[in-house]
Amino acid sequence: MATRALTNSSHTPQTLSLIASITSLLQNLNPQNTNSPNPSFLNHFSPYLNPNLVIEVIKHQTNPHHALFFFNWASNPNPNPNNYSHSHLCYVAITDLLISHSLFSTAQSLLESSHKLSDFIIGKFIKAYGDRGDIRGAIHWFHQAKTIESGRCLFSYNAIIGVLVRANRIDLAEAFFDLIIKEGMVRPDVSTYTTMIRGYCKMGMIDNAEVVFDEMICKPNLITYNTIVNGFCKKGLMERARGIVDRMMESRDCLPDTVTFTTLIDGYCKRGELEAAKNCMDEMVGRNCEPNVLTYNAIIEGLCLRGDVDEAKRMMTKMRLNGLKDDVTTHTSIIKGLCIVGKSNEAVRHLKEMANLGMKPDVKSYGVIVNEYCKMGKPEEAIALLGEMRVRGIRPSVSSFNAVFRILVEYGELDRAVLLLKQMSANGLLS
Image 1 (spheres, rainbow, N blue to C red):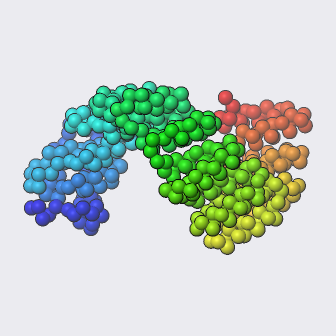
Image 2: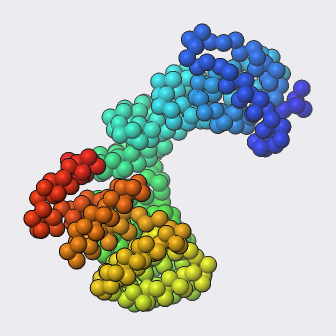
């Protein structure tokens, strides 16, 4: 019967046929039925069992109870001509599915009864609890991993630090990072360092990020470099950002990519250093690193903020000639630039013309014109635009509401201003 086992390919016609047949049978189950149905109807599939088939069947189930029923049957099939047993990846697949449906207790019971709880698996629980905003639960699972693995739990360390960074709890992330160094049971890897660097950069603690970067006991990878470069650029520390990029090019172990150069270009543009940004783009092209839409958008925005809309439009044309498609961000910058140079009517026309280009203006596009109408003393037009946004399913920003509110108060239309406040509250924009 061994010759009937599937090949390693998970997408052969035979595999797809088996997946469809098994899924069809499983869909007839009632997951609410407390009396477990007899799984014997699956027995004729047992000669075909292998880890790849089991994983693919699990992935194809929209109902986690169906997947679990199949997994439990495959744990002890009868007959079992090929002596099939679940691989580690099978347990990973069923765990991922159960966790994605918040069936934490079910997943935990399955893994505990199978003695399959491990650092790697627990890392998934930590991340899932973090995604739900349950920091206490995530920390509880970390301590579970520490106990099970006797402190050798790098996946769980990385997971809990990541959860805390995403939750802006840099103080706790720092405590866990210090713990991994202090205890010395495992060596932090590039993911550990990069996550801490990202956390510090996110909180504006760029000096702390640089200390961690300089103290790395492993080589930074491209993500690490790009993270620290972005951190410096966000703080306007362009000389230090450029210094990191120069180090990358000197070492040649990890050369800057499109993201690196685009981040640098955006940083220069935010500081109004357009010539430096253009030189950086030329350098980028010279190193066979192709600019993307984000690269062009950074320079276009910089030009527009400086009021050089004509040059921005030429840059947009250049982008198109290079096979790239301008997007909503591109045109929002153009609209903003037109407002800056006093061409408000042209800016309004440009907003309306975006639809002809196959684009839907977003909250930022509308926000620019709402603010411009308010500056021009045209509250009626601004309010009409807020109404258009709601019709299009776009939730106006706080700044747009505030701009309209201020001009209504300024014009003495207090009743309408109060009504606007009520609308803001209904939109969840007032705490």
